[in-house]
Length: 152
Image 1 (cartoon, rainbow, N blue to C red):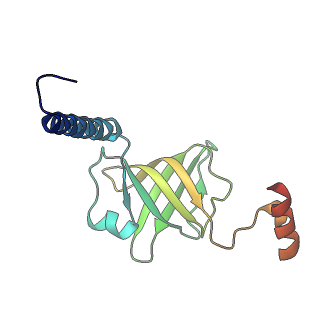
Image 2: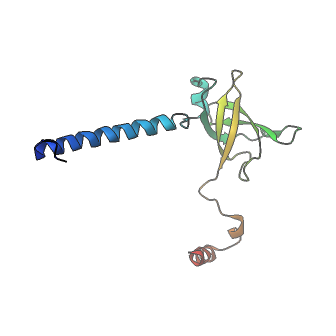
Image 3: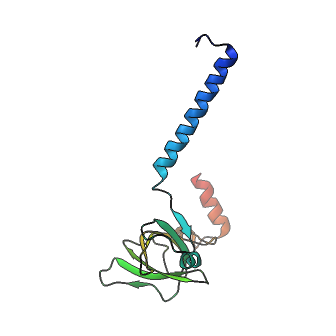
């Protein structure tokens, strides 16, 4: 790369070009991911400072006991997500995860409607740290460790 520049200046030009390429790649990645980013809200945060109606967000909390209802169409469920401070009604149409039930943790992805109901597009059921797969629930701890060791 001999453009009539001294070696010191060639290195400087190379560093500047690399920096510009790195900044351009970062900006391109941010632009590509702009629609994928979603904010996480707890019910108290959503009630205190609701997101824009068209903004995709995540709502996390516990499914309140006695709030889960399946509508007559068989695929729409309504429930209330709470965090001990506030409650947000949620509506979801689709197949719910196996671990989804009253009293369990949930993260709902969707949008808040103007009437205050959260319309979920996706549900992620959370389990506690004591979760055990149903295949292993009747095993002792030693048997479970042996089973896990065999699969490695």
